Length: 465
Image 1: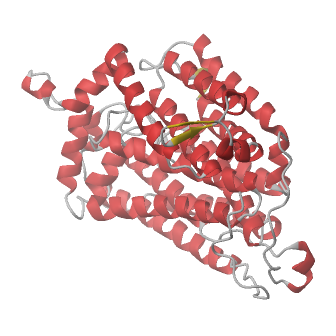
Image 2 (image 1 turned 180 degrees about the vertical axis):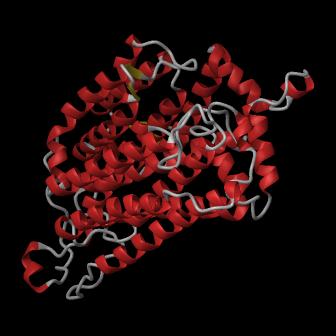
């Protein structure tokens, strides 16, 4: 596939690194987060929290170290990616701290800060050690083997809240499926890049659709079915939906055939109907989605979804103010699945829209980096990683707002969840690396700091990886 570069400047134009812009935006991101932290303290106790300066210094130090890693190892990277991640992570810590004040026996902000630090550390490791994203292409089958192993492992551990997606060892717990989604994106990108011509131009034509041969499409469909089957057994249907959407999007990008989108929607609808009808845990969520106020009429009080809708309604346009809402009434999932309801109640529609715009900008910059690349693997990898964020936000926001049934996933960066925040930092690190490759001058013009003229795609060896 020879997609032309969409945002490449004409030959001879000097490419600005924009590291100063990134540093300025990082300062703004830290100041906004610290202001939110102080606002919670003022609203709850009339005084700024005594550790506000320490919180700001810690978040600022993490942002500065990450910025230095990008400055020295990926100087041409997109200057918006890192500040958006820092701002979302900082606001997430503020919201979790605010909810901690209502739940003295369940303090999560300190733990989330530790996981955030680990995530930034992994971000730096990826940026420093991964000099060329195409290196990952050689580990495609290692990635898919590791992804399947990570997804199978939770089956041998007890279920938590009806789902077997957690591994608990001592006091430590994490979700292996969070790491598996990145590994599957690497495999899908490598396999589809190597076989994109066979997928697009060979096979049998049925009515208006041309289906690839089983020899080409079979292995990747088998991997996808196996991963989704495991997740269904574990009742982790949110991640199943995420993997299915990721598979369809990357297949569409690799082949350029819109028919795959239609096929994907039909299969997703059929699968959702069957699982929602036959699986009791999912069936109860579908019933709650269809009638969220049924428990109120039955005299049992509002359920989580009804409380979430009440929180959004109470927030109105401008919100009640940080620390002044009552969304903690939602229950045990308020810091994870339903943290968006807290944002909606206390920041209002305006604040909620700002959060969605941050996610949209993060996804758009990931797509832009991918479309600017010439190598098919990097293009598919960037679009796949950005799509993970987009799908996850849609699935969670749709569930919390009553658009689709609840799935039990964590809002990227915002919600409580160590595995989630760590893997999201790794996704941002990979997007940083890809965007640096997309914007950096070509080797033959690196000494002048200008972009070389656009050349044809690098010949790609079929079946590589």
